[in-house]
Length: 157
Image 1 (tube, one colour):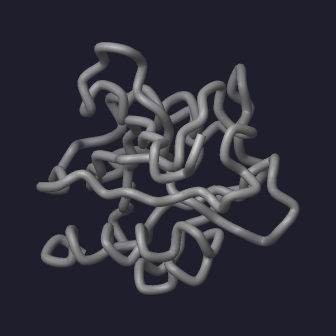
Image 2 (cartoon, rainbow, N blue to C red):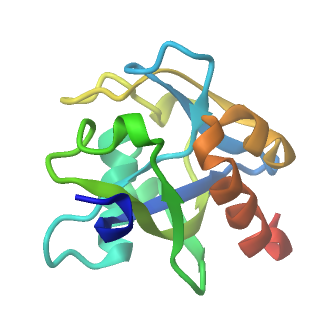
């Protein structure tokens, strides 16, 4: 199957910001390079984006829903393409990348509310980062996506 024939996997992402204007990022367990990312993942069949974003956030960070407040939703879906060598290897279907609905959320809890020891851990470490530095921290094929997320939420940062 040609890459142009492949579809985008439906997904969500969360830009979680603390009271100091810093963004939550985690360092993935399955990636040897020093890349950090915001919580994101695929939607379950029939799942609404807002619900999926809150589920992904809790599954990946251990932060319960009552410790976050959704501030904004990106008005358009954002996409990224996988490098050719990853197509068909990281998800069960042959997706060319993801089309994601992004949410900006305010963290209402304390750092102690983060718990990476979830049932299916995805991150080995986490930190609060300066929003402007996010594109330089992510894997290269998601850099444009992160620039688009920053632009979408610029007025709130």
